[in-house]
Image (cartoon, rainbow, N blue to C red; front, side, top):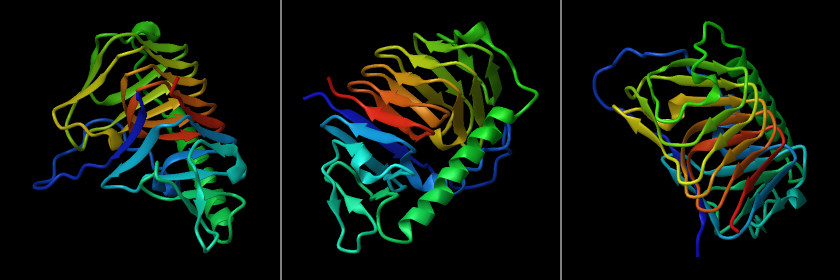
Amino acid sequence: MISTFLTISFLATIGSVVAQIGPPAVNLGTAGNYAILAETGITCVPTCVISKHFLLGNVGISPASSTFITGLSLILDSSGKFSTSSQVTGEVFAANYAAPTPATLTVAIADMQTAYTDAMGRTNFLNLGSGAICGRILPPGLYHWNSAVTISCDVTLAGGANDTWIFQVTGTLTMGNGVHITLTGGAVPKNIFWAVAGAVTIGTTSLFQGVILGKTGITLETGATANSRLLAQTAVALQKV
């Protein structure tokens, strides 16, 4: 069976401090506690897997209730504060669960919205390639497009473990099937931020890197892998067709 996998990566560096290149990182606040955070819905067409690599792969939804999470086979904990699922390494939280979960989620959603506004509002950016970045090697920096962005072939982000990238997309973001974002030089997904006003679609069997701050919906299609967080102000859909 072909599965959609979501992997959360948080890689630590050991040794001497190296100066950061790129803009200051976006502060996710408590939204950073979630692999997936959405406001209106989360769909997971089996079998998709949300796992952890150094960070918990928690899932949260608010203000929508747990009935708007489908495909995760949720088992409510006896505390009533969270659910578990064999498809999630972490816990699943919804606005209709027992206190303090609703209040905690309200803060996380607000932090997600603040992080999006911060990332999208940064200035002194570079407008590169009119939305077509196929084949590019992108150093750390702040990038902006007043258009849709299409990634139709492999892209490389080249930089160190402390370096940062912020991508501002005022249209949609579409990644083609089988396309990879490759990290070199020690770059890590937690320092890569994609603020996208339109819908985000990650194509089948593709590999995405970085935190997605979506103003609308985020879709991972069959077999796609995201070393990432999916933080959507509407819905997140993980597909298997």
